[in-house]
Length: 193
Image 1: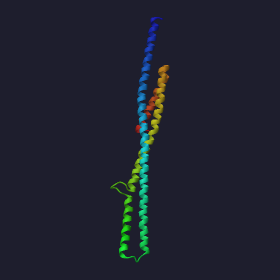
Image 2: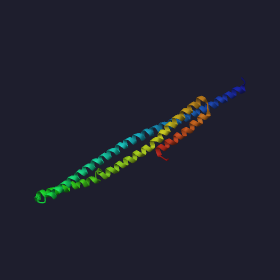
Image 3: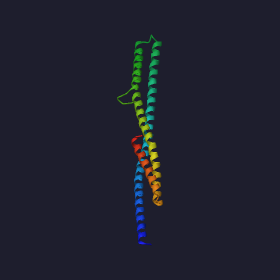
Image 4: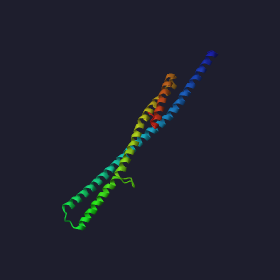
């Protein structure tokens, strides 16, 4: 082996080390982005599940208020019918009936909106809609994190193989896929698209 051949081998070895270092650094960066994408996807699904439960609870509470409101309306109507059937009712009993009818109607009206404790039907419906909106946003985010995780995992495999096989095409394919995974991760958080 001549000196020139040795020099060429050393240059090739140095060039290979540079490519391996570049691939290793790219893998490290993509592994970090993969961890961030995985965290985002996990949080999006947790948030979607939690908000779905909160929305269901608000709707159930709304339904309970609606049933109670209907019960009070029916009770008031029943007492009004009793008053109409007995026009000769004594004054004290009639006053009690009218007082009870008024109380039932006030309670039924109060169930429609209770801004002081935010537990009226109107407030409960708004709360349920807000939980649904948050849930829907999280559900829009989740697929982007899934796409990102898949792209980043494949990119890391391609980059790892490019180190072993010394194939630049695998490096560039892995890098391109890694960039797509990065864009999907960013979009998962901010929903640009």
